[in-house]
Length: 163
Image 1: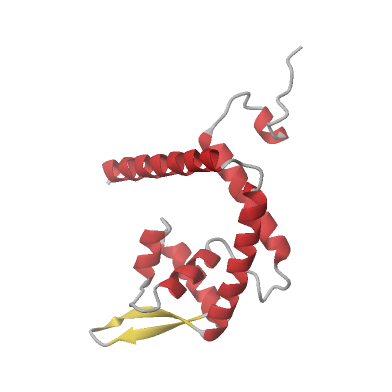
Image 2: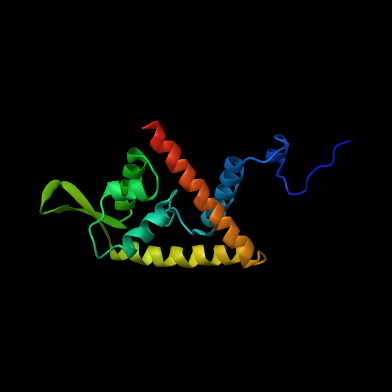
């Protein structure tokens, strides 16, 4: 009789082997679920990569940031970023403003309400990061990040070949 690997989830067990994509997706889902459980109301809820976008806008408040910048930075499709921006506008976290050199372009501005929500999210992210990595040696984390960089680079290369 085959022994079950205690490190495998029930869903993953059926594959009987490891898959990078499945592992990344499962970890992402668990992180997302954990962060959602800490959000107190529907008004506070940050969908998908919304928290990362708020942080990016906060860190780049000294320059013009446009929707296409977010698409590139977060490897997201135009429609996805557009929906996220609309939702964040509705919540009062960001504003779109025209730029002088091209009326068609709208730069994204983080509002004070958005800055406040970003500070809360940073605290939540930092706490979760600390809890997740508490018992993992730094050398293993360094290896993890190195492998992530390698995977990201390879995926970019594959994407460029298809274009």
